[in-house]
Length: 70
Image 1 (tube, rainbow, N blue to C red):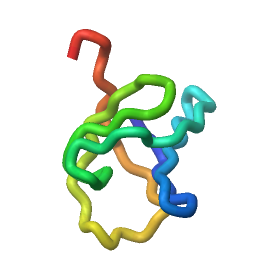
Image 2 (tube, helix red, strand yellow):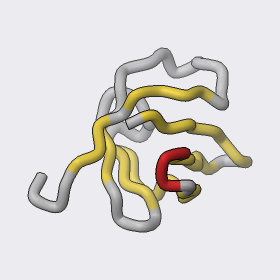
Image 3 (cartoon, rainbow, N blue to C red):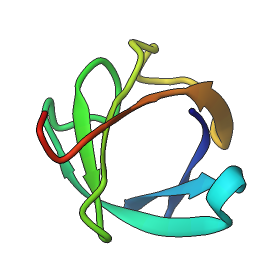
């Protein structure tokens, strides 16, 4: 699923265009959004691709949405 990640102040936000959904990132598996699982404020979880820590934001990436059973 294509998502856009941006940083607002000290927090990350994710935008899913297909769903017209914008939510705050509330949990990050590795303390960073890259290369792990993140959770957004509506409860959805995404597997994020690895990227360098200093990648320029905002960035549109392909992330895999985890279902409730994952």
